[in-house]
Length: 120
Image (cartoon, rainbow, N blue to C red; front, top):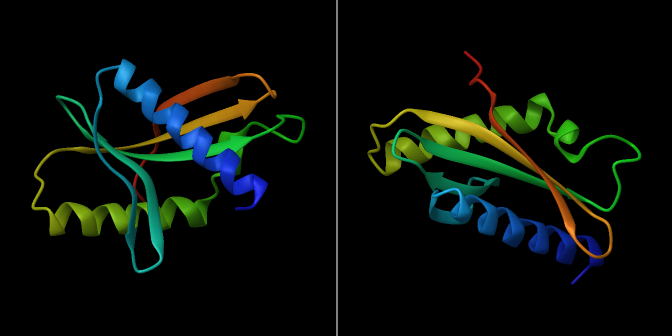
């Protein structure tokens, strides 16, 4: 497996650990719909939460969460909409981003809840 893929998996593991520590219930990971992937689908008492995880080894060129562009957001919204319909979920949805920077020893984690609104 490529080194960047291993880092991404470690970042997702760290994000799941973090969310669980905040009492999120993890519903599934790496959910796919027609080539669109949602890294983590979780739930709180109030929301179904769709989480994009970005992991980098440096923030020199910008924070990891800065690399979630409009196209990625649209794909997440499309996939989330399909998931909500497919699973017949009638709960408000929220889109979060978790950015992680690995310094070689530990992760620095930034959680942005309600990071963006669905495009109309």
